[in-house]
Length: 291
Image (cartoon, rainbow, N blue to C red; front, top):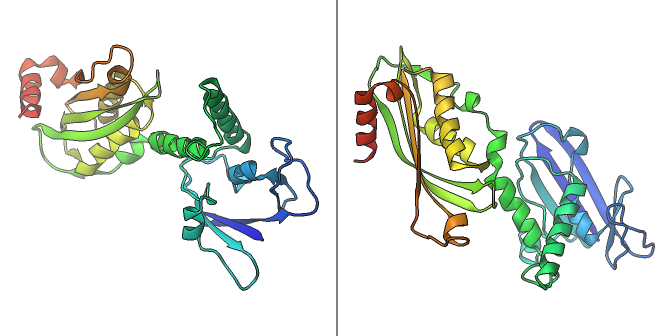
């Protein structure tokens, strides 16, 4: 039986194939174990079943960030038969045929799985049980999805501007977001209200401001820093007369642990330019976002 994986990124394409070792067990190149199921790829690397699924492709090109991996998997019992990706997924055999926003070295994937095993062992939980066996893989996928903002740049998001003679407030309210608290790796979620007063003729598309929120929210964050980073990016790249950002959010690290205050919400603000210095402009912004 041969498992064939292909990965495509941009215009480049490389193929890694692997076959199951039947009569010649050899130790895994990653963890050193010999198991009932061993695999060898076309680079003559040998891995146990767990480490095999953690192998990443296109290792020589891993330095570029923001690459998106599109993996397809086929298992052939013979030249005539082929198992579909959907069937593999339903059988739980397809572990890493997902899209990632960054390269994860093999040794790091193995270390993460081992860390989960130690954590489960400390709580006397069976890390090999059906419910927990694939938890490390699910965590890694979710973690990279929730921190995909590191692959985004504010200057690219706000790089396209339009000519519009306007010197009045432009406000986008209730932009929802979910971020990860860097203290506990627990989510905090809420809404952001963004406003700026154009100077000259620079205005930006509406969706760009929502994308800017995600760019900074999808990182390990503090709400205070998130608020300042969004306001500073608008100020730096649009150079408006004034900027205002207000964020309201609920924090899981406060609602389900510690003081256990589920209804508590945190409000932070960052005002720059005339929205900081001029009381009338500041009051207008704050009144509009409350309507």
